[in-house]
Length: 298
Length: 159
Image 1 (cartoon, chains in turn green, orange):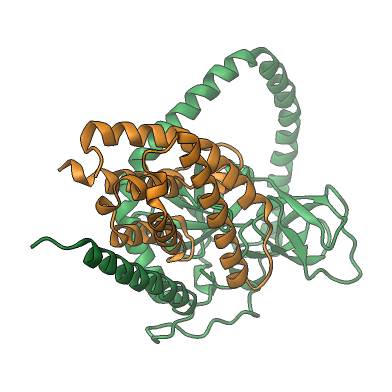
Image 2: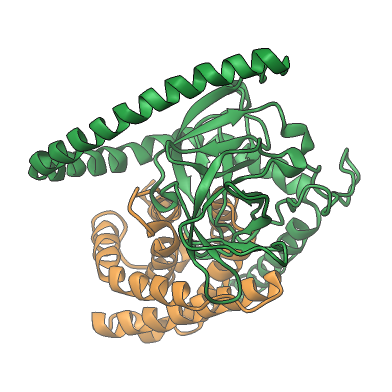
């Protein structure tokens, strides 16, 4: 049976309207029931991970070979720089060795409990958020590799974010620059605590500082370990500006071009609040105050 | 069999936009490729990219990119509704005219998603990134349009 043009137009109108309403309902549902949406997201992530992994490889290879060509041109200058840096680092190595021995002796003296062993998984970034309103990446490791919610994601330079959703073979890392990221930090060498709050810009800001403390450009920012989501002392970044409403921090990690991330398990993941659920499946009300870390709102 | 070309290219476009390029700052500005494909096919073969497929593609893109699921779906569906109502003005017109139409659509789409995100975030978000993302999307469109047009002529032809 042929459908007339008028009928077709009517079907089009109805299906468009129904689907637009359905999309709007999905947005509201996603805001309300995070448990449901996270399990759907994990399933889709797992399904798409092999495809995303495959199509991200050519781009990675292309960028890598471009970098190789560029590095050939600067190899002489780079060599000089590295030789100089090596000399400086050898000096630091001596200092580190001396301090490490001294630290071991002092621990022995004070009978300090040994730190728990730390395990990590290295994962490749296979997708990023693609848009101006979220800062997160997807990596190609999941629960089958030992990845769990709340683990810290590090680059060689510093903290990049934390694992916010986990599938079987893929996981999402919420970057410290995301609008929803809140990390308890401390200014290194002082006892000044603050919350590092992302706002989707390249430099997250230091909020809720002690009223009497001052922060200067160049101050090192490290995690405070408060709330137990991250261990204390992870390098985060340096204060880059102090004018405006709140000081801004330049992260050590090059967050805008991540390729590999180390997901580190410090055994602290259970400190994260369970996301809100309207259907009551295992979700208890998240406690915003206790750890300074809001549950992901998306 | 070649009738799935519009759906396949739009899915590919959606995946392309979340593809990491390992270039500083690219993630926030990556062009809205799916919008280009949706625009092209809605003008030339709307029958082969029905609303349900746009809904599914938008949802998958949002679930994979970490965005609030439904936002891309709504954007693609509204784009279809607007383009479909005016599609007879665009078929068989000069490319510059089609491009101008896409520029207007992109502007509207960026503004719409900015307003929606601002509403959901509870405060006014910065406009700079959506503006750049829109400009990048508009400037990449000729390449996408050329490739999609080539594929269309080779495999399916006009309605």
